[in-house]
Amino acid sequence: MKKKILRLDKILAHMGYGTRNDVKKMMRKGLVTVDGEVIKDSAVKVDPYEQIIIISGEQVKYREFVYLMLNKPAGCISATEDEYEETVLELIDDEYRVFSPFPVGRLDKDTEGLLLLTNDGDFAHNLTSPKRKVPKTYYAQVRGQVSEDDCESFKKGVILDDGYLTKPAVLIINNSGPVSEIELTITEGKFHQVKRMFQAVDKEVIYLKRLSIGNVSLDEDLELGSYRELTEEEIRNIAKL
Image (cartoon, rainbow, N blue to C red):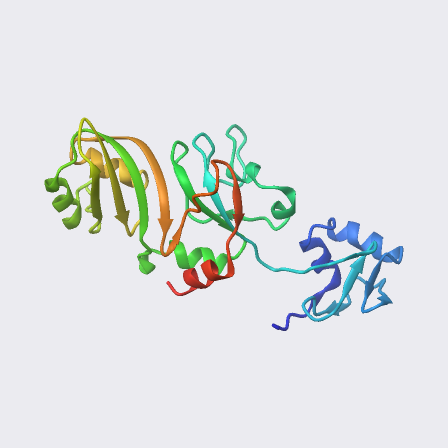
């Protein structure tokens, strides 16, 4: 078990038992014990992984980080707060929101699918740093007949409307027709990149869904707008990227 010595009031506030001031008031009332001893000094430091903390009769099960997989619906934005738009944080229950999670990267407002949320900055950085070149795979419906020539263009990189040459991408055609169905894997995340890549070959994305990030895929059992915690295996897999 990892060692982590922290102020008791900080632990309790982090776990959502109130603000630091709220916690101090509860402690002064004798509502907090550590290993059976009433603690009224909020500055006392304890190891929340090793010591038993009880507040108002409830044992504190400490955790530092949360890792969530959300099946993002269209219509909400990948942000923690916004004055006008619904955010993905509004889809998360208070038991997780107390940890102040944030989206790892972003999905456009009208894009569905896999979005990870966490309060672990290192975890998020490892997934979003351009140096890591973490692959992200999307399913899209595209107006226009996607061809093998498009696959070759994407493999070499296409020039976006601002003159940027994209990194090589893997385009797989599931169905080609007036509205084509494809899967596209990219290793970067420019603004509206998938849509702009198809615009570069004179086609239009009309539906977009992210299927995977690195070696973690969207749980097919998750309905739009629902979420779950990442498994230990999924967290380990991401750590290996």
